[in-house]
Structure formats: C-alpha cells, structure tokens
Length: 494
Image 1 (cartoon, rainbow, N blue to C red):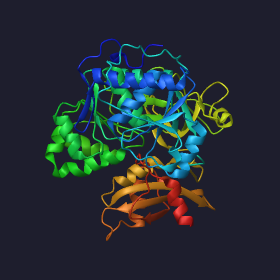
Image 2 (image 1 turned 30 degrees about the horizontal axis):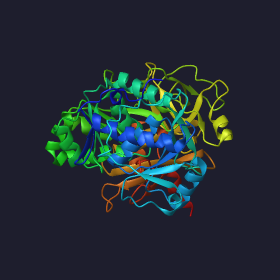
Image 3 (image 1 turned 120 degrees about the vertical axis):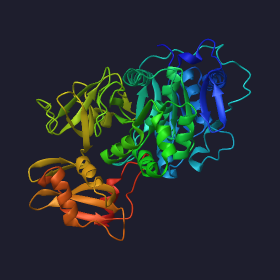
Image 4 (image 1 turned 135 degrees about the vertical axis):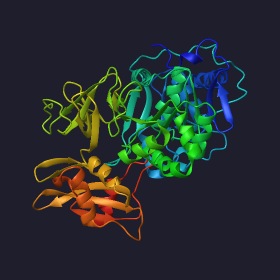
C-alpha cells in the first residue's frame, strides 16, 4: 500500500504542515520528528504490525506528531480522551492493551496510565530528516486506529479502523470538496475522534496542505486565521451556533467567513435556522457531511453541488447507501418523506469491534451492510436528510414514524426558542407522544405550550406537534456538542 502521507516521503520541503498557536512544523520538520519516533516505535514493537500504542490526545502539536509516527511505524494508535474518567480509561486500556503511551513532555497522566511505558514526544532537535528510513508497508486491512465509541448503551467499544478506510474516506472527501494541497484548514476540534483527528489532521497532511489548530475554539481565532489565508473551516453545530449568535454584532467576523472557500459542519445536525443566519450574514453556505466512528465518512454535500440546508448531501464516491424498513427490507423508492434506517457498504468501513465478535456480527447484515442505527429520508435526486437515531430519535405516534430532528428544526425557527431537543415517551393512546425540551430565549417569558404546538403544526403536520413541553436552563451535551437525550429522560424519571 502507498504511504498515507506522500508529502512526508522522499525529500519533504519547507511548506507549512501543522500549526498550533505559535508552534508550527514544516513538512521537513514533521518528517524528521515523526520519522525518528516511528523508528523508536518499531524497535519497541519488534517490527510487528500487531501492536497498539496509546496517544494522550491533547489539542497539541505533540498529538499530531505522535499519531503520524504511529501510522508510519505500521502499528495502530489508540487516541485517549484527556477528559475521560478513570473507570472509562481503565476499560479502554484493558481492552486495547497498548504496549506504551505517547504524551507531550510535562503532561501529567492519570493513575490508569502510569503502569505503561511512556515516551515523551519530541517535536524539535531529533537529529534526522525523517526520510532516510522509508515507512513500513502494512497491508490495506492492517489496523491504523482503534477509536472508542461514546458508550451510551454500555462500555465503550473499540472500532478498529484499517488504513484502507482512512485513505478511502480522505480521497473521497478530496473529490467531493475539491480539497487540494493549496488548502489551509482551521479548526478547534478535539483530537481523540474521527472528526478532529482523521479529517482535521490526517486529511490536510494526506493532501499536502496545512492545518492551523486553534487549541480552543473561538470566533476570534477563526476570524484571525481566515483573514490570514485559511481557506477551509471544520466545526460542530455548537461552534456554528456561536458564530451565528455573534455575527449580528461582529461585521468583521462575517467578512472573514465570507473569505472561506469551504465551511463544513459535522458530528451532529446543524439546525436550519443557524444555516440561514450564517448564509444571510456571510454569503457562504455551510455544508454538512455524515459519518460515524465505524464508517468514517458516508455522505457529503459537494463543493460543486447544491448546498441544501438540512441535508447531509449524497453518498461519497465508493460508498453504497440504502434505507431499510424495520424488518430490513430496502425501501422501494425515495420520495423525501419515507423514513428508513441507513445502511452503508464500502471501503470506508471499520473491520471489527476489538474483542467483541458478537457486537461485530450484530452490526452487519449477512451481505456486508453496516447497520448505522441512524434514521433518514432520501430525496429522489439522492440527497439524504437524517431525522435522528433509531434508539432515541424515532418516535412512533398514532401510526406515524416521526423523526425528532425535523421537529427540532421547526422549534428553533421560533424566536422564543434558543435551544431545543425532542424525544418520545409512552402514551396509552398514541403509542408514543412527542415531547419538546426547550431552552427559552428569555427565561422570564418562555413561549407557551399552545404557541409552540401550533408553530410546529403549521410548519410540518399536526401529528408532529409536541404534546408535552418542558422548559429547562440548558441541554446536556457531550464533548462534540451532541445532545445527550438519555440524560433528559433519565433526569425526568429520577
């Protein structure tokens, strides 16, 4: 298999590769630092491609160098969330059994990691150009990463992502987004998951472009980098919501965003209301894509396609996608209304859940389709619109299948609603009733139940209106900004 990072092979130049704050590396410096560390990892691992190396994945230059080195050494990286609790870390370490941990000098590691051999990642003064010893040549199916899922229904599972999947996804996105070595990406995403690490760090490096990581997201940081030549921005809906809230009072931010070639949102649905506010202020459309830990990227709005707000675009090159009924029967046609579960097949898929053959078998159909658990509708021209998770966002009410996402978007169009989440709860007559959880714009004067129910019914259909409305001060979210709906219902049950 060819190198994941062609720009690091041969004679890397002085072009910018990585920048974190005021610290940066050229391709030549990255080749030297990652090459020296990769050589050391090969020695520790005895040349085997079966080993795993933990990476303490802080938003720092060392994390990027560490992951690149692990991949160049031909072993698998296990990115660790620095915010994980000791119980979760203990589970991940016991499950993945890494041979050692890589961390930035000076980082204090929690007790579950202290038994592991530690190597401090040096990014300067390594005394080698990093290109004398070529990268090893693992096979397409050899593991590149073991990324742990959020564990909302049990202990986190380690999704084994092969090198083939990383290459396939990044090359498909290059096609969809016209992504090249001339692009400069800015983002402030965490580096322990697919969005921030694979797309946000490995993506630019595979293209031969550069990435500027903000360390911590801020609208000021985004504006600064876009004014200084950045061409692309990646973010999650929480970040774009903050941008949308800031734009009316910050014309400079609007001008900066207008300079971007591409604004991309992912990891959760971006409300249509925020789409419209950003476009109105900047003249730029935010495009969305859809992926998972297990599948990397499945679909995207294309840079040369119609940026249709509320959709995640069309399947990427090489990805097959279908919607199926509850019994697994594929939908007979796509009309933009019929709801089905997304199943995907292609070179972007993971190979297995580590040490979980039962879970791996349950995740796939007999003919190799991965069951995503996400519910969607598909327009006749192929555009996909996700309406929620099968477990938490599909509401069966009065004989209808209702996606929570479209009701949330409708609620967010009401001026009295700052944030919204929709769940279902048992109803003796309807089977399930629609429940809205609202963070009001003005807590002293929240919109009433009848007002919100009528608002939704007028935009969607009467059977989709909320039957219950709860006013709350904030929605529970994870590190990626996804709403933790099980926490909403659990808090109410407690």
